Image 1 (cartoon, rainbow, N blue to C red):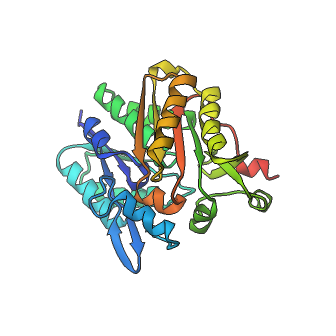
Image 2 (image 1 turned 45 degrees about the vertical axis):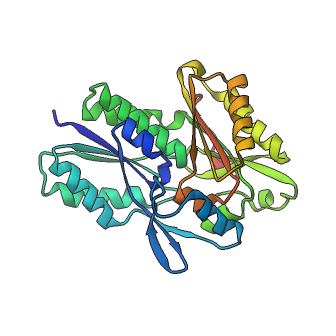
Length: 300
Protein backbone atom coordinates (compact mmCIF):
# COMPACT_ATOMS: atom_id res chain seq x y z
CA UNK A 1 0.00 0.00 0.00
CA UNK A 2 1.37 3.42 -0.98
CA UNK A 3 1.73 6.01 1.81
CA UNK A 4 -0.74 8.90 1.79
CA UNK A 5 -0.01 12.62 1.93
CA UNK A 6 -2.81 14.94 3.09
CA UNK A 7 -2.87 18.38 1.50
CA UNK A 8 -5.01 21.39 2.43
CA UNK A 9 -4.81 24.91 0.95
CA UNK A 10 -4.20 28.47 2.06
CA UNK A 11 -7.82 28.80 3.18
CA UNK A 12 -7.33 26.17 5.89
CA UNK A 13 -5.49 28.45 8.35
CA UNK A 14 -3.50 25.45 9.64
CA UNK A 15 -0.37 26.83 11.30
CA UNK A 16 3.14 25.77 10.38
CA UNK A 17 3.39 23.93 13.69
CA UNK A 18 0.26 21.89 12.99
CA UNK A 19 1.34 21.13 9.42
CA UNK A 20 4.55 19.69 10.80
CA UNK A 21 2.86 17.87 13.70
CA UNK A 22 0.44 16.03 11.41
CA UNK A 23 2.84 15.60 8.48
CA UNK A 24 0.61 17.65 6.16
CA UNK A 25 1.33 20.14 3.40
CA UNK A 26 -0.75 22.74 1.58
CA UNK A 27 -1.20 24.18 -1.88
CA UNK A 28 -0.76 27.92 -2.10
CA UNK A 29 -3.26 30.56 -3.12
CA UNK A 30 -2.24 34.20 -3.65
CA UNK A 31 -3.10 37.61 -2.28
CA UNK A 32 -3.15 40.65 -4.57
CA UNK A 33 -2.45 44.18 -3.31
CA UNK A 34 -1.71 47.23 -5.45
CA UNK A 35 -1.26 44.98 -8.49
CA UNK A 36 1.31 42.74 -6.79
CA UNK A 37 0.53 39.03 -6.43
CA UNK A 38 2.08 37.33 -3.39
CA UNK A 39 1.95 33.74 -2.18
CA UNK A 40 -0.56 33.35 0.65
CA UNK A 41 1.71 31.59 3.10
CA UNK A 42 0.30 30.01 6.26
CA UNK A 43 3.67 30.64 7.94
CA UNK A 44 3.55 34.38 7.18
CA UNK A 45 7.03 34.71 5.67
CA UNK A 46 5.94 37.29 3.07
CA UNK A 47 4.29 39.74 5.48
CA UNK A 48 3.08 39.62 9.07
CA UNK A 49 -0.53 39.38 10.25
CA UNK A 50 -0.21 42.90 11.61
CA UNK A 51 0.87 44.19 8.19
CA UNK A 52 -2.03 42.51 6.39
CA UNK A 53 -4.69 43.60 8.85
CA UNK A 54 -3.10 47.02 9.16
CA UNK A 55 -3.61 47.59 5.43
CA UNK A 56 -7.27 46.68 5.81
CA UNK A 57 -7.74 48.84 8.89
CA UNK A 58 -6.46 51.68 6.74
CA UNK A 59 -9.37 51.06 4.36
CA UNK A 60 -7.54 49.27 1.51
CA UNK A 61 -8.87 46.04 0.09
CA UNK A 62 -6.69 42.99 -0.56
CA UNK A 63 -8.01 40.50 -3.11
CA UNK A 64 -7.24 36.82 -3.47
CA UNK A 65 -6.88 34.05 -6.03
CA UNK A 66 -7.75 30.38 -5.89
CA UNK A 67 -5.00 27.77 -6.09
CA UNK A 68 -3.42 28.10 -9.57
CA UNK A 69 -3.38 25.01 -11.77
CA UNK A 70 0.42 25.25 -11.88
CA UNK A 71 0.58 24.99 -8.08
CA UNK A 72 -1.57 21.85 -8.08
CA UNK A 73 0.63 20.39 -10.81
CA UNK A 74 3.77 21.13 -8.76
CA UNK A 75 2.45 19.64 -5.53
CA UNK A 76 0.78 16.60 -7.09
CA UNK A 77 3.84 15.67 -9.13
CA UNK A 78 6.14 16.18 -6.14
CA UNK A 79 4.28 13.80 -3.85
CA UNK A 80 3.31 11.25 -6.47
CA UNK A 81 6.95 11.22 -7.53
CA UNK A 82 7.93 10.49 -3.91
CA UNK A 83 5.59 7.49 -3.92
CA UNK A 84 2.58 8.96 -2.13
CA UNK A 85 -1.10 8.86 -2.94
CA UNK A 86 -2.78 12.22 -2.20
CA UNK A 87 -5.90 13.31 -0.34
CA UNK A 88 -6.51 17.03 -0.90
CA UNK A 89 -9.04 18.63 1.46
CA UNK A 90 -9.98 21.96 -0.09
CA UNK A 91 -11.98 25.07 0.72
CA UNK A 92 -15.74 24.87 0.19
CA UNK A 93 -16.68 25.04 -3.48
CA UNK A 94 -19.25 27.70 -2.53
CA UNK A 95 -16.29 29.94 -1.66
CA UNK A 96 -13.45 28.85 -3.97
CA UNK A 97 -13.09 26.96 -7.23
CA UNK A 98 -9.87 25.30 -6.07
CA UNK A 99 -11.31 21.80 -5.60
CA UNK A 100 -12.60 21.84 -9.18
CA UNK A 101 -9.22 23.01 -10.48
CA UNK A 102 -7.47 20.35 -8.42
CA UNK A 103 -9.77 17.65 -9.83
CA UNK A 104 -8.95 18.66 -13.40
CA UNK A 105 -5.21 18.82 -12.76
CA UNK A 106 -5.27 15.50 -10.88
CA UNK A 107 -6.72 13.75 -13.90
CA UNK A 108 -3.96 15.15 -16.10
CA UNK A 109 -1.16 14.30 -13.67
CA UNK A 110 -2.44 10.78 -12.98
CA UNK A 111 -1.98 9.98 -16.67
CA UNK A 112 1.75 10.00 -15.89
CA UNK A 113 1.33 8.04 -12.63
CA UNK A 114 -1.13 5.24 -13.53
CA UNK A 115 -0.64 3.37 -10.25
CA UNK A 116 -1.29 6.40 -8.02
CA UNK A 117 -4.46 7.92 -6.54
CA UNK A 118 -5.57 11.49 -5.87
CA UNK A 119 -8.84 12.45 -4.19
CA UNK A 120 -9.95 16.10 -4.11
CA UNK A 121 -12.50 16.65 -1.33
CA UNK A 122 -14.81 19.64 -0.94
CA UNK A 123 -14.59 20.25 2.82
CA UNK A 124 -17.87 22.29 2.82
CA UNK A 125 -15.93 24.61 5.14
CA UNK A 126 -13.23 27.27 5.21
CA UNK A 127 -10.62 28.47 7.68
CA UNK A 128 -10.10 26.04 10.57
CA UNK A 129 -13.25 24.14 9.58
CA UNK A 130 -11.34 23.01 6.50
CA UNK A 131 -8.19 22.70 8.59
CA UNK A 132 -9.89 20.45 11.16
CA UNK A 133 -11.04 18.09 8.42
CA UNK A 134 -7.52 17.97 7.00
CA UNK A 135 -6.15 17.15 10.46
CA UNK A 136 -8.84 14.48 10.86
CA UNK A 137 -7.75 12.91 7.56
CA UNK A 138 -4.09 13.08 8.60
CA UNK A 139 -4.90 11.27 11.85
CA UNK A 140 -6.62 8.53 9.85
CA UNK A 141 -3.49 8.20 7.72
CA UNK A 142 -1.34 7.98 10.84
CA UNK A 143 -3.63 5.20 12.14
CA UNK A 144 -2.78 3.17 9.04
CA UNK A 145 -6.15 3.26 7.28
CA UNK A 146 -6.31 2.57 3.56
CA UNK A 147 -6.73 5.30 0.96
CA UNK A 148 -10.39 4.36 0.44
CA UNK A 149 -11.07 4.33 4.20
CA UNK A 150 -9.45 7.74 4.67
CA UNK A 151 -11.57 9.22 1.87
CA UNK A 152 -14.80 7.62 3.10
CA UNK A 153 -14.38 8.72 6.72
CA UNK A 154 -13.23 12.22 5.75
CA UNK A 155 -16.29 12.73 3.56
CA UNK A 156 -18.51 11.51 6.40
CA UNK A 157 -17.15 13.95 9.00
CA UNK A 158 -17.63 17.15 7.00
CA UNK A 159 -21.13 18.01 8.25
CA UNK A 160 -20.14 17.35 11.86
CA UNK A 161 -17.88 20.41 11.85
CA UNK A 162 -19.58 23.22 13.78
CA UNK A 163 -18.38 26.75 13.03
CA UNK A 164 -19.37 29.97 14.77
CA UNK A 165 -17.77 33.23 13.65
CA UNK A 166 -18.26 36.88 14.51
CA UNK A 167 -16.82 39.75 12.49
CA UNK A 168 -15.97 43.39 12.94
CA UNK A 169 -18.14 44.14 9.92
CA UNK A 170 -19.77 42.09 7.17
CA UNK A 171 -18.57 44.56 4.54
CA UNK A 172 -15.31 42.71 3.79
CA UNK A 173 -17.11 39.39 3.30
CA UNK A 174 -19.75 41.04 1.16
CA UNK A 175 -17.14 42.71 -1.06
CA UNK A 176 -15.29 39.41 -1.43
CA UNK A 177 -18.50 37.55 -2.28
CA UNK A 178 -17.87 35.12 0.58
CA UNK A 179 -21.14 35.48 2.50
CA UNK A 180 -24.68 34.60 1.51
CA UNK A 181 -27.55 36.35 3.27
CA UNK A 182 -30.82 38.10 2.57
CA UNK A 183 -30.87 41.84 1.96
CA UNK A 184 -33.01 42.07 5.10
CA UNK A 185 -30.15 40.74 7.18
CA UNK A 186 -27.75 43.37 5.85
CA UNK A 187 -30.37 46.07 6.34
CA UNK A 188 -29.98 46.69 10.07
CA UNK A 189 -26.57 45.99 11.60
CA UNK A 190 -26.09 49.23 13.51
CA UNK A 191 -24.38 48.28 16.79
CA UNK A 192 -25.09 44.62 16.10
CA UNK A 193 -22.60 41.82 15.45
CA UNK A 194 -23.57 38.92 13.17
CA UNK A 195 -22.82 35.28 13.95
CA UNK A 196 -21.92 33.19 10.89
CA UNK A 197 -21.90 29.47 10.30
CA UNK A 198 -20.94 27.23 7.39
CA UNK A 199 -24.26 25.79 6.22
CA UNK A 200 -25.04 22.32 4.87
CA UNK A 201 -23.91 23.30 1.36
CA UNK A 202 -20.75 25.14 2.41
CA UNK A 203 -22.04 28.72 2.25
CA UNK A 204 -20.83 31.21 4.85
CA UNK A 205 -24.06 32.66 6.16
CA UNK A 206 -25.13 34.76 9.14
CA UNK A 207 -27.75 33.12 11.36
CA UNK A 208 -27.96 35.43 14.36
CA UNK A 209 -27.48 39.05 15.41
CA UNK A 210 -25.99 39.90 18.78
CA UNK A 211 -25.71 43.37 20.30
CA UNK A 212 -22.18 44.33 21.27
CA UNK A 213 -18.71 42.88 20.82
CA UNK A 214 -18.42 41.04 24.13
CA UNK A 215 -21.84 39.48 23.72
CA UNK A 216 -20.90 38.26 20.26
CA UNK A 217 -17.78 36.52 21.63
CA UNK A 218 -19.88 34.91 24.37
CA UNK A 219 -22.39 33.80 21.73
CA UNK A 220 -19.70 31.90 19.82
CA UNK A 221 -18.83 29.88 22.91
CA UNK A 222 -22.45 29.36 23.95
CA UNK A 223 -23.50 28.16 20.49
CA UNK A 224 -20.62 25.70 20.24
CA UNK A 225 -21.34 24.48 23.79
CA UNK A 226 -24.91 23.71 22.67
CA UNK A 227 -23.78 21.73 19.64
CA UNK A 228 -20.52 20.04 20.57
CA UNK A 229 -20.25 16.31 21.30
CA UNK A 230 -17.59 14.59 23.43
CA UNK A 231 -15.97 17.91 24.28
CA UNK A 232 -13.50 16.40 26.75
CA UNK A 233 -11.95 14.38 23.92
CA UNK A 234 -11.58 17.30 21.53
CA UNK A 235 -9.27 20.15 20.63
CA UNK A 236 -11.28 23.33 20.12
CA UNK A 237 -9.84 25.53 17.39
CA UNK A 238 -9.98 29.33 17.67
CA UNK A 239 -9.00 31.61 14.83
CA UNK A 240 -8.73 35.40 14.98
CA UNK A 241 -8.02 38.32 12.67
CA UNK A 242 -5.47 40.22 14.76
CA UNK A 243 -7.71 40.54 17.82
CA UNK A 244 -6.37 41.87 21.11
CA UNK A 245 -4.64 39.57 23.58
CA UNK A 246 -7.24 40.57 26.14
CA UNK A 247 -10.03 39.26 23.91
CA UNK A 248 -8.07 36.09 23.11
CA UNK A 249 -7.59 35.41 26.82
CA UNK A 250 -11.28 36.07 27.42
CA UNK A 251 -12.50 33.59 24.80
CA UNK A 252 -10.06 30.93 25.99
CA UNK A 253 -11.31 31.31 29.56
CA UNK A 254 -14.92 31.11 28.40
CA UNK A 255 -14.20 27.94 26.41
CA UNK A 256 -12.53 26.31 29.40
CA UNK A 257 -15.47 27.19 31.62
CA UNK A 258 -18.39 26.39 29.32
CA UNK A 259 -16.99 23.59 27.11
CA UNK A 260 -14.01 22.15 28.99
CA UNK A 261 -12.26 20.58 25.98
CA UNK A 262 -9.10 18.49 26.00
CA UNK A 263 -7.16 21.39 24.46
CA UNK A 264 -7.57 24.79 22.83
CA UNK A 265 -5.57 25.80 19.75
CA UNK A 266 -5.48 29.53 18.89
CA UNK A 267 -4.29 30.53 15.41
CA UNK A 268 -4.27 33.67 13.27
CA UNK A 269 -6.72 33.70 10.39
CA UNK A 270 -4.40 33.27 7.42
CA UNK A 271 -3.90 35.65 4.49
CA UNK A 272 -6.77 34.35 2.31
CA UNK A 273 -9.40 34.19 5.04
CA UNK A 274 -8.08 37.39 6.57
CA UNK A 275 -8.29 39.31 3.30
CA UNK A 276 -11.88 38.14 2.92
CA UNK A 277 -13.17 38.57 6.47
CA UNK A 278 -11.34 41.69 7.65
CA UNK A 279 -9.77 42.65 10.98
CA UNK A 280 -11.19 41.77 14.40
CA UNK A 281 -13.00 38.58 13.40
CA UNK A 282 -13.16 35.60 15.75
CA UNK A 283 -14.02 32.00 14.86
CA UNK A 284 -14.47 28.86 16.94
CA UNK A 285 -14.71 25.28 15.68
CA UNK A 286 -15.46 21.83 17.10
CA UNK A 287 -17.04 18.52 16.11
CA UNK A 288 -20.64 18.06 17.15
CA UNK A 289 -24.20 17.75 15.94
CA UNK A 290 -24.62 17.39 12.19
CA UNK A 291 -25.15 20.72 10.45
CA UNK A 292 -28.64 20.86 8.93
CA UNK A 293 -29.16 24.59 8.33
CA UNK A 294 -29.49 25.66 4.68
CA UNK A 295 -29.47 29.33 3.74
CA UNK A 296 -31.24 28.41 0.49
CA UNK A 297 -34.07 26.68 2.35
CA UNK A 298 -34.38 29.46 4.93
CA UNK A 299 -34.78 32.05 2.16
CA UNK A 300 -37.79 30.29 0.66
